[in-house]
Image 1 (cartoon, rainbow, N blue to C red):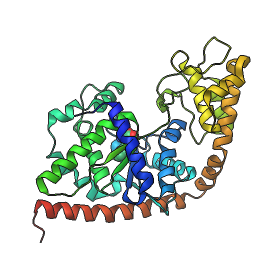
Image 2 (tube, rainbow, N blue to C red):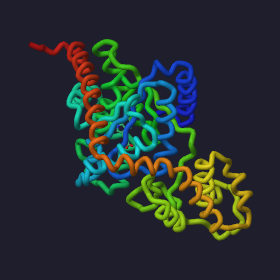
Image 3 (cartoon, helix red, strand yellow):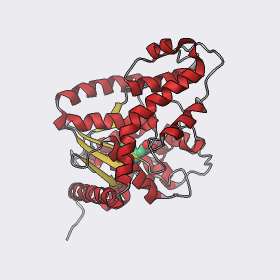
Length: 349
Ligand code: TRP
């Protein structure tokens, strides 16, 4: 079922070309779980891609995947607060509600109803093989996988297919879910007639950023720089970053992952080259490197942070954006569900 990462990359590059030529033929759907505020990894890994696509003229759907929060945890936390933070981060970054639809899946009943026919198209064995679900369960220390955890990739297929999204910007970990979505679309079409596109994954060109401790970024590990942090909080977070004992700074991702990760971060913010930045720092050591990274982050994110503070001052604006997005998503979902019922031949009186 799963193709190699190289094959996915090649397909993504080809998609990139078609997108540049005909943006109007694409509807992008992407989403985040409202589990906390977005961090710089999200920004460079996915938000930047969304903004680029928004500017290209493709239709943009941004999902707040609130039902996905309870897949790998029992306590949902402050979903409403986290949803508002997610919206603030996205809007401050430049997601434009005039051109993009931002919505929450718990607010779109017809989207969720698609899960029923879709579940009939997949086998339990297939669900149990999903490597991302297995990883997430292992990371969360879950020994008994819930029905939702097992089936959420099919729910994610509904997220994408309800609006007939055909391009999904994702990280590598999400590839199995895109593959599952393609399988659902294909089987539905085979059984009931052509209805859904088979969406394609758009992989980010940005190298994967690590947390300040050199491991995978994760809010719960406290190793991330959040977009909303103040300049001082950013400085503190970067100051605590792991480096190594060699004072001479070089860009060497294989042998010096932590130092190279900081260089990459500075380069992304400055629009420069990490190897050149390394040369400029030279014997300045970890201290000079961290100073450079802090300045780069604080300069790059200053306008976003300022705008975020302005938006946060008016909660009714953010709520209004979500309400309008939910309304549009409901229209689309109702139309798709009507089509699905028609194809399935359910009786409507
Ligand atoms: N599973 C994604 C994540 O954990 C979030 C998500 C939910 C998503 N639905 C989606 C991503 C649809 C892309 C498309 O980050």
